[in-house]
Amino acid sequence: MSQPWNLPEREVTAEKALRSRRRWLKWTGVGAIGLGAGAWGWWRFFGGTDKQVLAGGEVPGTAGDLYPARRNERFAIDRELTAETAAARYCNFYEFSGFKFVWRLVDSFRPLPWTLEVTGLVGKPRTYDLDDLIRTFPLEERVYRHRCVERWAMAIPWTGVPLAALLRQAEPLPDAKFVRFTSFDRPKEASQQSDRSMPWPYTEGLTLAEATNELTFLATGMYGHPLLKQHGAPIRLVVPWKYGFKSAKSIVRIELTDRQPATFWNTLVPHEYDFSANVDPAAPHPRWSQEQDYMLGTGEVRPTQPYNGYGPWVASLYS
Ligand SMILES: Nc1nc2c(c(=O)[nH]1)N[C@H]1C(S)=C(S)[C@@H](COP(=O)(O)O)O[C@H]1N2
Ligand SMILES: [Mo]
Image 1 (cartoon, rainbow, N blue to C red):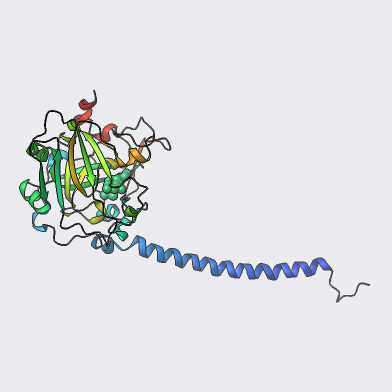
Image 2 (cartoon, helix red, strand yellow; image 1 turned 135 degrees about the horizontal axis):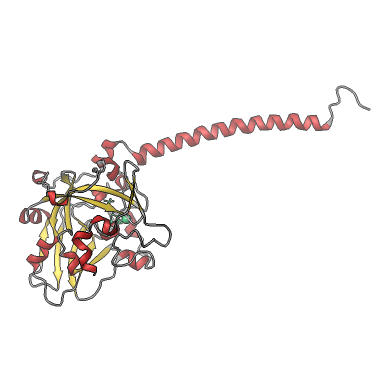
């Protein structure tokens, strides 16, 4: 028999549902706050303040007196310099991480003392220590475009020496056709190098003609001071008309060879990263178009240029 106090079953259910919905909302609220706090903490840690991002990568003891070096205006470009902090917090350096916040993970890296060996098919092999190198060859500053194969791009004032100057001093032998670059191998300092299924150390290569092109640069600094750890301290290659992965960081050896050397990315993922890797908007990556550059810092989008805008210097190498 129906009495007023006997609520119909469907209303009881509705009331219960309402209560459980309130509880759910309360807990999702708590969850959202927790997530928000987590994201904020994560950003504080891995995003860092501008000061932390720059200070964390400094290498005390590099010859600061030689910087800034005089800018060589021959290499002036059509875009504004990328903000230093934008470049320094967004790096590719797989020895430390597959994420871009490398600056947070380089504490254990000890780039000094450092030696660079020039060896292989040369008349005069030689090992430089860093100080030796930057006092033997006059340092200059060059503003170059940089284009990563992943599409992000930047404009960087590098300080360093043309690779051709070093190679000339080494006196390449007639059989030398290629140059192989080898980065450091220190699993104790670079956590990802403990994974020995990867072909460490990082290696790259150029033809001898590419390596002696006047654009090819060995950088020991950027933005008027020695290189930060996350950018490949204390010495790295810069090859501005090729995708960024050709510009090997923290190199310890330059070796002249008579055959094309294996490279890190070409060994790991041959169908995505070829040996020549010249910037080419008309040749899409297997997973994305290569028609646009995305500038770090400003987010500006620009059409990608053949040879990254360096055709006048290098197109003749490939005709
Ligand atoms: N040893 C080494 N060199 C390296 C890399 C790397 O992971 N390890 N990444 C390359 C890639 S993919 C790019 S785009 C540039 C990035 O330089 P940056 O982080 O100083 O901007 O370094 C290149 N050199
Ligand atoms: Mo890259």
